[in-house]
Amino acid sequence: MVSSDHSLHILLLPFPVQGHINPLLRFGKCLAAHGGIRCTLGATRFVASSTKPGPGSSSSIHVAVFSNGYDGGGLDELDGPGVPYFEQLASAGSETLDALASEAAEHGRPVHVVVYDAFLPWAQSMAWWRGAACAAFLTQTCAMNALYAHAWVLIFCNVMNKIRKCTDTASSS
Image (cartoon, rainbow, N blue to C red; front, side, top):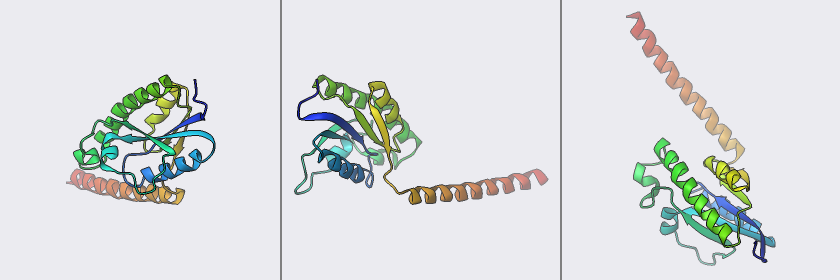
């Protein structure tokens, strides 16, 4: 049963680093300002323990804490983001978020929509498995993403050219 004061429950899942949390938090506050919408921000244990609500912070957004497997130091446990962090985040994060969604449903607040940071594509599977609609949230502008794509191509091509030159030099000797 859905609580009478909230007919729609939206789970917001930011990538747990600076610059990704606030855009989703602001988006959630805009949604929560409309009647009948309950927004819950999913925060990792490390983020939740290392941040404090600012003065005048609103209670319109609920915070649900989950584990990403690096509860003590976040990204610093691995010297920053990389493949091991993303794999652990997908594994532990999807498991603990599923438990969080299950608990919300048991309390009469099933998650209807999951809005996730585009860096967390595994959240889509978790949402679908729970029967919730889902949407990716881009925390950067399309122009910035295009710039990153072009930079990646330039870096990749430069590295590949250096490898080719080394291979050509080695095979001609």
